[in-house]
Amino acid sequence: MTPRENFGSRATVIMAMAGSAIGLGNIWRFPFIVGEYGGAAFIMVYIVCCFLLSMPILLSETIIGRRTHQGTFGAMNTLAPGSAWKWLGLLTIFSPLIILSYYSVVGGWSFAYLCKAISFQFKPENAESVTSMFGAFSSSTWAPLACMVIFLGLTALIVYLGVNKGIEKFSKISIPVLFVLIVIIAVYSITLPGAGEGVKYLIKPDFSKLTPGAYASALGQSFFSLSLGVGTMLTYASYVNKNENIIASAGGTAFFDLLFAILAGFAVMPAVFAAGITPSSGPGLVFETLPFIFAKMGAGGQIISVTVSILFFLTILVAALSSSISMMEVGVAYLVEEKKVSRHKATISLFLITLVVGILCSLSFGTLSDIKLFGLTIFNFCDRLASNFLMTVGALLFSVFVGWKMDKAAVKDELTNGGTLKSSSKLFPFVYFLIKYVAPVTIAVIFILGFIG
Ligand code: TRP
Image (cartoon, rainbow, N blue to C red; front, side, top):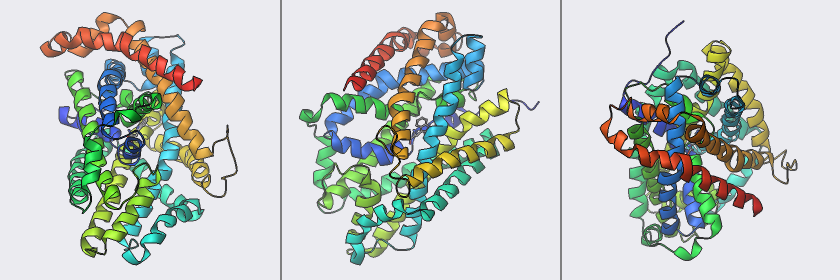
């Protein structure tokens, strides 16, 4: 048997994990949720959530993955053989595939919009029609499907190339490139006339908008953004060396993810204000509002605006790809390790399964829009099921597993590399307290409150 692949160094571990974390969640979801809940005040809640609740979950997954050097199912079987915990292992094979199915639809849209930007479709003379272009495009049948197939195909190709030649290589290039791109776009956005209001919005807190819903949204968003609760990070951590400092890698991942989200806020919000649009215009922000802005600004300098629009959709596409590969890898690791299927066959099978669900999600914007599950379209149902249920339950169970089922000594051994890491040893009591009590209790409370209303 060929030896299991490992990530090469601390930097590659962080790049790969940050690659999974940084994605549509940061660019497509974060800015509009910030818009909905009043800017800077929400960002503060979000930061606290990230470090007190999401970090312990990220560490829990990392501990399980690195301890066993196995994917979700194998890891659960090794640490708790013959117990009901195997269901968590199984659940986390399906959840990332559900996310990948609808994520690929949006990934496909990004590809389509990159093509539109390259072919100069956001022009000042059709600025008004640019907004309606999105509805027409997403509800059509073939174009979004074709783009989704391309997106899923690219995902499968990278995963097929393997952990080192595919995932690691792609993340090592894409993450630095993404940071450069988002900074360029943010600078452009901040220097637009009238952008000052947008900057103020992101910096000056408005606490009146911090409703109970804001807290639940902050938690959900930070789980989604850090790819938690569905075994993605667990699987990536299974490729981490025994001598790696996992508190440092997890901290680095959370830091870069947060930084990118905030930069994305500065890339999107000032432009939105500059165009005189209300910030809470929902998910359409990226595919309706921004193309409109690019088109309008084109009047002042066509070349710059076209370039920025190309860079923007390229950023979204690359960020989405570095995340989608992590979702597919979970299932691939399972099939390769547990079912002894070749990587080649595993990738193709998962490509086909996701494609079928993805097609249904894509068509639910048009042809299948009348089909409702619990009152939601197929796309929205998958999103809700994953974000509000599967991820939260998974996250809760991972922290309960590490805090209550695993031996404390084993957890300490994993976090401190057998006591050799001095700073991690000092942090251990605090980190363990977060994993054992703070995270599970708070997540359970927010989860139950979310259900009640
Ligand atoms: N974190 C990614 C983003 O922000 C999406 C993602 C990748 C994800 N893997 C995941 C979300 C697993 C939930 C679960 O776009």
